[in-house]
Image (cartoon, rainbow, N blue to C red):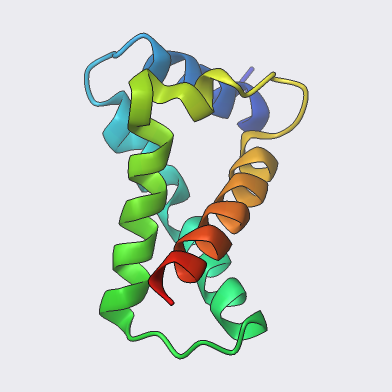
Length: 103
């Protein structure tokens, strides 16, 4: 029996928190497109025109935020929802804050 996506994502978060080799790279690979879609949606809602480079920079800043302070944002994940849901909500809030900071 193959593990569900939810179990896979939970294991990925746990691996990041344990600093397992390549876990962070796998996490970024798994959620990069989703984070980019969140950034694009925030920019659209806020009517901010972003270049592709600016979108990538925002995504990188969001991922740095997840890694900041020994993965504090990942440590706050309570494993009561999908990782993708948590990531979307937190990424949305971070994108709004980062765009506000730039203005």
